Image 1 (cartoon, helix red, strand yellow):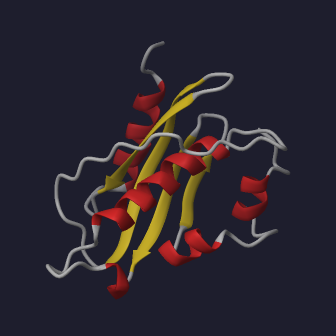
Image 2: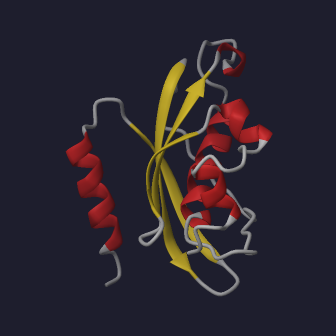
Image 3: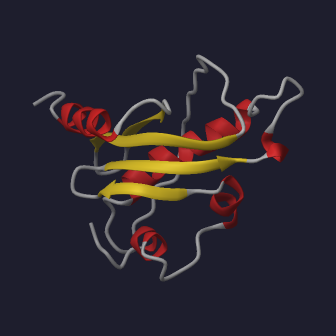
Length: 142
């Protein structure tokens, strides 16, 4: 992890985020580069809605990709970059207009391939539950 990497410069406000992140309204709530975890926040705008009034799945997939990708990016050294090569998404319930939060984590980081996950956070989850979830996710496989 290098605080001079692209990700940390963006997270600290030293450089602007990419246009795609701006479009989604990406913001960082909590970042732990040592553990490879991140909590993100997005703003689902009216332009993101499908005819049923829910956020269209492609926008949700992009938000989850940005959540998972930034969890990994927070762990990278200067000059490293990790594009997404495969993304699988399952939708369990619709998302509505407004603020959406996500939790991302690095599951496995190899030399050439990494695995991560991202999931939306329900609005009713409180801070204590999120911290417990972050802690428990790090104990998998130990």
